[in-house]
Amino acid sequence: MANDNAARDKTCVKYLAHYAEPEAQFLASFPAQYNYQHVLVIPAFQETAAFIQRFANSVLAKQQCLLIVVVNQPDSDFGREHQQAQSDLADYISGQGQLLWQDENLRLIDLALSSDGGDNKTAIDSGAVSDSNSAILLVDRFTKPIPADQGVGLARKIGADLAVNLFITGNISSRWIHSSDADAYLPNNYFTAHADQSTSLNRSLNSAVATCCNFYHHAEQQDIHQANLRYENALRYYVAGLAYAKSPYAYFTIGSILSFDMLAYCQARGFPKRSAGEDFYLLNKLAKLGDVAYLSDVIIKLDARPSQRVPFGTGPAVQNIMNLAEQQQDYLYYNPGIFVELKQCISAFESLWQHCLQPQLWLEMLSEPTQQALVSIGLLSFVTKQQSAKQAQFDKQLTVWFDSFKTLKFIHALRDLGFDSILLEQAITDAPFSLLR
Image (cartoon, rainbow, N blue to C red; front, side):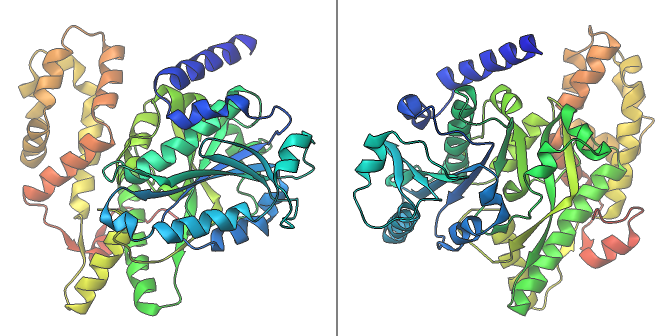
């Protein structure tokens, strides 16, 4: 165990030295006496203070959690339009308790100590140990905006990098970084599900590098609620299709329901700095390092809302569904026949190594659409590069190569080769699998 911890720490220290964001270096003066069990990272852009109020009043705030809030805005005209709102949110967070520590653009606020308008400098100078259960580490990335093309990915990375640093210094004890969003209502068992290994489900977390919680969307406005329900069903249908096909990449890619292991995060070199899809690409790397566990009994409520803050994802998808409904057009989704083809393809991969010198013979055992789809995504090139590999290494590299991104390309190729998208509800009815709940 000691050797494992040393290897983990060495990997994390290397990550912090070469790949972490500058904010992680600002923690050099972070006081050793402030220690927390859990860490939760939330990026905030165009958000009200409601999520801070929810956290402060929740059971989670009594479980020794450090909430890292990265208040950010893009360096575009769209971002500058909202700078005052970001500043107001930061001021609200600062008013939640006494200032315990600050350096550069980081401020640590104790939730348990009331803010009476006094001199916050006193709390810093006194060096007194806080009696609070939780605190907020506020990161100001609106005064110095984030590059628009790096968006929420960079915001999440800053928060997670800070968490890794505080884990290495002993200020955080749990190996899990919890990633969520301001629109998420986290349940009371959110942290304990990752810590309690008394059940067979949670014992499986020992081998997991990431987890995805269960979720549902809700909105008071009926048209938004219905649009989100259809999108949620599409997500569940897609993941259920991957699970039916026995893909090792069958998991939800939603940033607000994601948790991941510190070591695996560092091995994957952190969140990609993208304006959208950062959760998809991080999980794609994490899944190659270990299991992604689904916590069906940890259910997160998500505010259902259309949004154009990111180029793709839940918000734009919901807006698109609403637009289709207004135009009385159908919402179409992947044909279930695609997942049948995917299942047969993944099953056939077991014998691919035996035909690595003549992959065309192996392809001929598959349907014509699957053959064309695999050729179009570069399977023959992969096989050529792996021809000298032993079977175990070949099969491992094949799983790495045919990852969630390649799988999606394969699915799109089949769609373009005649497996036309159909009405979502019809796809769910016709599918040889049930939605993942």
